[in-house]
Length: 165
Image 1 (cartoon, rainbow, N blue to C red):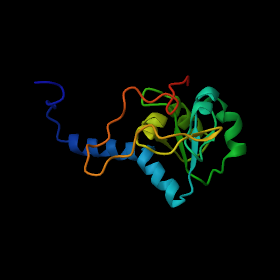
Image 2 (cartoon, one colour):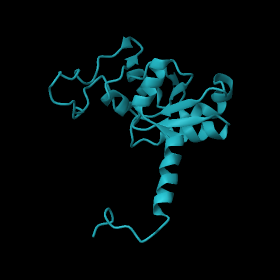
Image 3 (cartoon, helix red, strand yellow):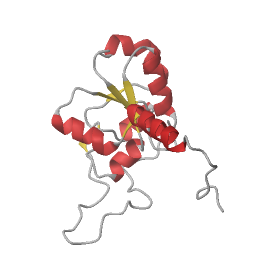
Image 4 (cartoon, rainbow, N blue to C red):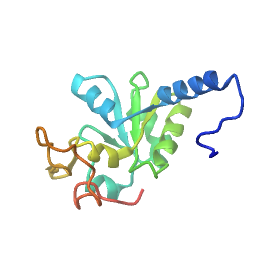
């Protein structure tokens, strides 16, 4: 039996699992929920913690650029502690979002990390921009009655750059 299908006999496992997943939902959000919050006009500060190079190549409209290493010097002067913050990095393989969330929570901010980062924002077909304005979508719109959209492999150049964190 594999580790996926076998669980040690533990009567507390369901309760512990519920606590684990509830805790994750307190501190994480996803691109779909962030986009919905933006469209509804929710008071949330969205922060891109990536490098200057990554920011210039593409970002989420409405995001503030604040690399995680600059947060201790900038956050208290530039952010309203009464407004919840969502941070994002490049992708699930990037931990700069974790570092930014840690820095902000240490400073007293209410913060969540957007899982999937910019990569999954793009893959979800949400709007992106750079210094020149809106970027074209990475994915074509779905055809009515057609197959579901699958993320392209690799992502289209210029829409979701793989940049240094």
